[in-house]
Length: 174
Image 1 (tube, helix red, strand yellow):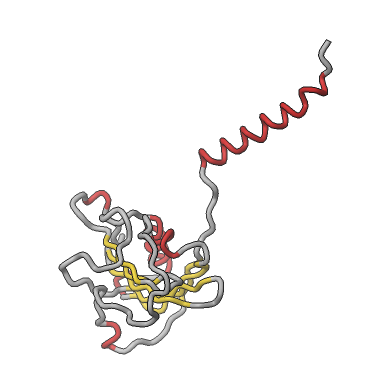
Image 2 (image 1 turned 180 degrees about the vertical axis):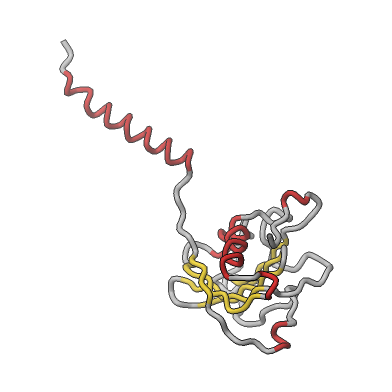
């Protein structure tokens, strides 16, 4: 006769494996980047800046392979996005925040963020923000309607465009 307590470790192992399978199929819940309004005055010249211009701030300390989206490129240390300015067409910070959240997870038309501008048209900056990282450092992020330009913690610049041939995949102002 088999003693029932011999099956207890096997049952525990089965429950643990079932939990791991369920977690991997649902994906691990990732942290959110807090988006806050932090108004700051800008000159008319600063507001005319285009998304194709380099920030020319911090030299890139360690170039890495391009990421699949902005969230991945910013890395796990990105904690907060401080929105300093947005054009009146965006109406309010809630609309701006919703749009930025969509951009963070969206796949650019190139399939990844890239380390150079890859479009010919001029794209005006409509949202000026800074990403705050866990260590307190801040890096710039400029956003247009369907475009993004930002720096990661290493100071590397990245560009992404969310337009392209298939309009259903566009990430633009609501």
